Length: 92
Image (tube, rainbow, N blue to C red; front, side, top):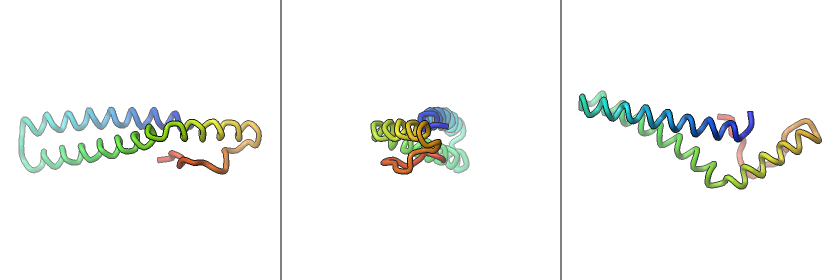
């Protein structure tokens, strides 16, 4: 899986988190109690984490693109990914 595939995965995860947070907010509107508020708060925290991960990639998209290119070239010539990267590998 390439970094770009993982970026797409991050986008999909963020979109799913938005849907879950919206659903939790609707539940909270219908039944405002401690339990539904806690679910809503947890969903919003998950959304925030997904968006922070995506923002880190987008803020450094040039570095990620260069590292992805270097990995591809390294695989062609040496059969393994580049040893040095400016950006962390995204294996989460």
